[in-house]
Each structure stands twice: as structure tokens, then as C-alpha cells.
Image 1 (tube, rainbow, N blue to C red):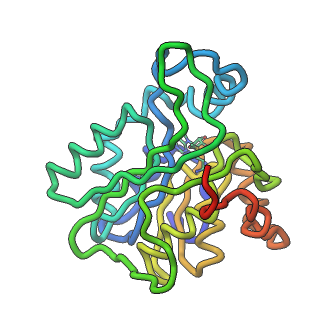
Image 2 (cartoon, protein in one colour; image 1 turned 90 degrees about the vertical axis):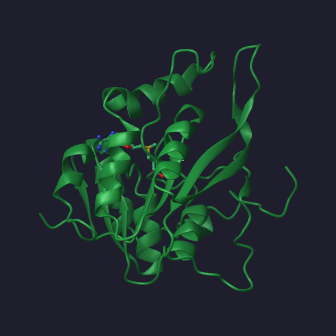
Length: 246
Ligand SMILES: C[S@@+](CC[C@H](N)C(=O)[O-])C[C@H]1O[C@@H](n2cnc3c(N)ncnc32)[C@H](O)[C@@H]1O
């Protein structure tokens, strides 16, 4: 099947198997998180969207199988994976066992998810970066690209009109892609949601392969991709304010 430069509707656990070995330059993705009942209470509406976004696939997400599959399709291991706290250990073990470099990047937000009394308020999102020796890393001179911690103002969120409950900031995704790939490289996002990775690839002249299982998210992401009148980066200018103290 030809997946190149398309968002494909379907289950990535099956579709991934159809991608040829060593054909992908970079993975940038935000898989369904493993959510435990005790991961925080008082989630009001967010619990509802977590159910929509993740539930049907929750039991299926196996980080070990997922990592082996992306290892097979990547030319050289090179991946950014958003993850929950519970999954960090799986990713770090995988990187260590394979002797890959890893870094934990963090996005700080000003609208933490409310929790019950006996827990620290969570105001960060984790992004695992795992790469094999030889993976692309562009030293973009003159740009402040090398902070592991990104400050993000979520209080001024103005998501794209094709928004998704867990839409990631386009500027951050673009930054990762610029650093870790070159023009015409192929970027894979097996959990594309609203298509943020796809829009970043479109704007940065990268090729892409994207999978999304939810028909509504899939259709919205196609509209978002086709609607070039939306300049997401402009829309999200107020979304980021990396220089300002939180
Ligand atoms: C956390 S969201 C990704 C959001 C995305 N980063 C964005 O900016 O919009 C995860 C997405 O994976 C999709 N998904 C979950 N399981 C899947 C599977 N087995 N195959 C393909 N997509 C899946 C969900 O429907 C959801 O849209």
C-alpha cells in the first residue's frame, strides 16, 4: 500500500507492518497514553475526552511492540515520542538495551490538570527523544533550539479550528522536525490525531506517513491539511511565549 504523503484511516498496529524495513527517517508521535485509574482525580471533562481519544485502544498499546516496529522501519533509530510518566521506564529501558542515546524533553504548561489533594500538580508533558548514533541532528545556528525544557503558555490557547482534544503545539513539532530531519526526508506519525505532524511536514517540505484510527479526527485532519488558508503558526503565536517567565 502506498502511504506516502497521505493520512491513512486505520489501526496503526496493523498498518505499520506494511511499511518497508529501513524506509523512515524520523518518527514524531503522540501515542495513546497508558492511563491508570489512580492517575489523578477530579478530571471532569478531561476524563471524557481521554475516553474518546484513547479508550478503545488503551489495552492495545504496548510500548515494547511499538518500539520494535518503529525500530524495524527506521533507517537509523530517530524518534520523538510524547508519553505519560508511567511509560518513561519502558522507553528508557528500550534505549539503554539498544545502546541508543536518549533525552527527556519537557514542556511546562500553565494549565495543569487538576488532581486530588495528595498529589503534586502536574504541569509538564514528557517527550522522549531516542536516537541511534548517526541520526540526523541539525545544529541550527542562531536559533535557540537546544533547550530540553520548553515553556508553553496554554492559558492563551487558540488551537486550530480543526482542533483535537490533545492537539500538540505546531511550533514545537516543527522545531523537532527541523532539528532531526532534512528536506524530503520521510517522517512517520502513526497516531496523527489532528495532523499536527503532517502540517509541520507540509510547511517544512518533508514527506510523511500518518495513521489515524478515529474517523472524525481523520476527516478533520484532512480538512486541516487541505486548508492552506489556515496559517497555524500565526494562529498559535500567542500560544507560545518561550521568553516569558511562567
Ligand atoms: C494523543 S492523540 C494525538 C494528537 C496529535 N499529536 C495532535 O497534535 O493532534 C492520539 C491519537 O491516536 C489515535 N489512535 C489511537 N490508537 C490508534 C491506533 N491503534 N491506530 C491509529 N491511531 C490511533 C487516537 O484516535 C488519537 O487521535
